[in-house]
Length: 639
Image 1 (cartoon, rainbow, N blue to C red):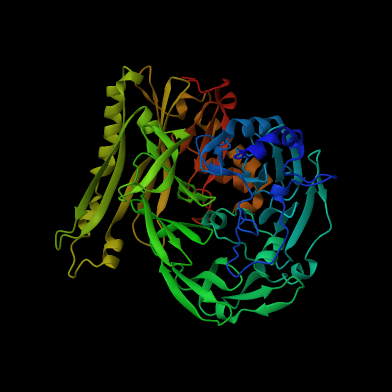
Image 2: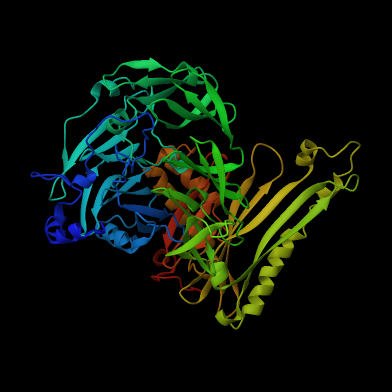
């Protein structure tokens, strides 16, 4: 904490002497900055994990995180931000090194999902998604000293909170089991000491109900994230109750659970309402059951509710301190809505960036009351802080806080241009087919064969943009008007977007595309198209150039990988046995597939939708090292 007065400066030496136990429970005392006395709150008290009972901010550092997909081993981009919204520390390399030293560096590559939370000067890493993997669980990292501890073996965590000098870890009940909550003290030697369970009476009421954790963050729900800053102890102190929900005959039912385990039905929330976004002592904010875009406020004292916001255009929501941060669809605006004042404010234009695949749930974040957005500057994806209206009152001031996320290959190595083409109905002129393609062109400085490579890339673009199947052309004749339903049955839409561009081992240009097509029905289809060029020759390559064996041997190698994965997680598959998994994969594997992704020391083979199962089963991927392919440690041609 920065010292801003002379008095505090005079005691700085004494404070430094005690820094080893700052923010952690010790046998002799506690750090007052993390202590919350549990005094009575006013009706405006907020369920905010960073806010104390007196309204002062307790936590002085915050994690600004963006999940990158450049490498499955990567922890993503993470920075510590101070209370003023400025960069304090880059963490990714430190965290990556600690995980690798503890044999967790490849956990993401092996199928585990990771989540990172920074609470009270400790970085928590949660690995989840595979119950049988003994690496799953919650880990704690002391970033200053490199200390590393596994806190729990269960990675299926619903929330985590440091409150009243205790660590609370909540786990939602599955299959009508009760919700549970573990409590720990953090000792001076960085050990996590289990304490007696709290609020047992309240937890005993949850065998059929799921506790609602707030404030709401849409990415928590979408990716099964654990909620930071929520616990029963905090909720009971600040609101006096927690809300829990269950499905009953196709409808959501809600109850209020008090600290002593007494429950009360909340009838006004069971009448056409849905997701709980935020609540305090008197008011609940939620969405409509039939329309998740409509946001309502519900007065728990009177049971009355009203529509406060039509949020139909938003794709990502996050709430902090009564503020609803919401980003609209690509090309729209970032807005903040004050739930109490019911006032909406536009903050920043979220323009579409061709050649760049951004994760919407991370693109905009609100931390400690400050809004951050990531956007492209030259060839860098970076974080910017929005600092309010400028002197002219015309637009929000945008501050570059020197937090680069990743280099965008499309803009580092060349240029990208979007092309579109349509096919229209000859009877009424309505658009029946639409094609879109993001074309990458390599700068000449990276290869003397750039013009040859670029011509081959243009041919791929022309093949998509200018191709309209004869069967589609034949069916446009009709007797009626081209209604939307009729158009969907005739044609559709195809999009080939540029996902990433990379130069691997200074020799191979890897272009990663994502193809999506819709031609009617409940959903579209997508698959990856990855193209590889040898910069030293201008040749377009395929797996045949990197694999030293035969095509049948390659199919057997990939099928064996699927068989191994099936053995570990059979429930992920719709196949009936290891033999069935092997035979199906062998039949579908293709050495000429464009859904093979190339990295520095391994490849990823992707089975797209419907290849190994139904659409709902999704895609399946396996990794193969170049050692297995051709005996080399890194990407090297075999032919």
